[in-house]
Image (cartoon, rainbow, N blue to C red; front, side, top):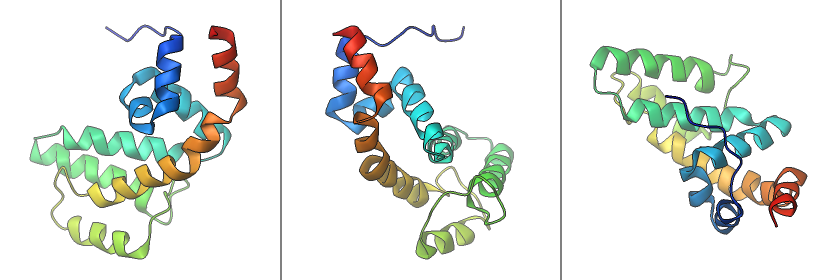
Length: 139
């Protein structure tokens, strides 16, 4: 059964304002933040993060390999329009890991993207019209 698309409560909004972790733990928070990222042309960061979370839950070796390859093609490959911004050291780690992908192939890259969203996008999100308007509507 799909999640109901209910607007967040004022309590939830305030929690999201307190910490990036609280925002990312909540489906509604991730959805709103993803919409904000889309407006900043950096939605691929959230998509990559969520794909990595999905990969970590996988225990079928064939599916792990397939999902890892798709993540690589979609977000790591320099040929991809959705390429995420990673440093060369992390790219090397991924390239070594891709020889035998595991659910944790992208852990370092995922941490780097989490940090990027936390440091860069999250403060802008809290100052965005999207977030402020919702706060006003609910206050």
